Length: 338
Ligand code: UFG
Image 1 (cartoon, rainbow, N blue to C red):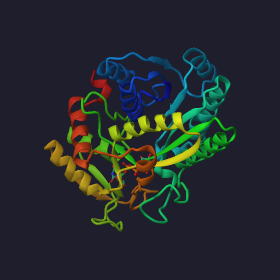
Image 2: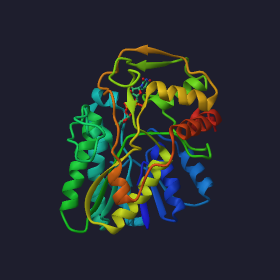
Image 3: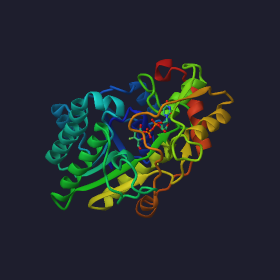
Image 4: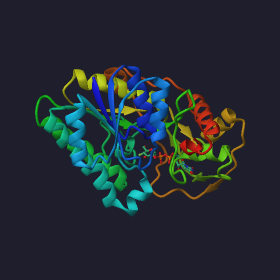
């Protein structure tokens, strides 16, 4: 198939691009490099020994999108492009609505104009909000607690309406839990622009000496050791979920949401311990107050994805930490190490 990947140079985008190219699909990537690097694309091209089309443009740029659809004629789209910092989204919500919601509408208009009717959307477990029960299944009520989460939720609703607007459209919503880790080559990985917001990149930057210590946000949660518990998923497993989802939109019509997680949780301190074992480095940490908006625990019920996408996570927390370390130690300054 000819597949357009928006945001294909980003962390999850680049890992997915690599897996999709491995399946011999033809690919066009559109990325504005706002929180990503063109070096990631060069490295994927080398690793897979394949060519693909690259367009440096914003997904909100309707003219650029129309050109891509006219030239490349995608048969399916995997839509990653968007902003993703929870804290920032509360400070500048309009920017988030513009990029995430308006960007998706522009994309859908370009798809309609060219007759492309299949899309896989990069959603998030954050759409569920405070758990009413755990593990979350796809029928859990959605009540996101921050503007970023609401952009994901609103885009899901828009995509549902679009899916129902005719009987050819096909939509898969992938609700990611906590993606971490890196490709086994150590050549691509997570490379945040600024101070990392997320646990794993922060821990790996402490291990490599870029930061002095980790602050653990809260140790009084109702979890086995009092620290926050999450369902961490290896980014290569997550990338493989997109391969399965592309296959699914090609064969099915309508709209489906799937949790993409392992079904197992790890606390912050368990992650720290696993990372110390993987890296052979000590991770100094201290306990600080809870981070605003955090929940105690988040775990996926991934049964629906296993049954309907024939997809299941394979990698352990040890694999996640070892591959993160391989990437971080080989590229201490991320893609700027080049
Ligand atoms: N944490 C720390 N110190 C840090 C960073 C994180 O203790 O420096 C803790 C958090 O409090 C939490 C856990 O580590 O308990 C995981 O935090 P992350 O920021 O890595 O991940 P979140 O679960 O908060 O959020 C992530 C993504 C969101 C996404 C959500 C989906 O960042 O974009 O998962 O559930 F929406």
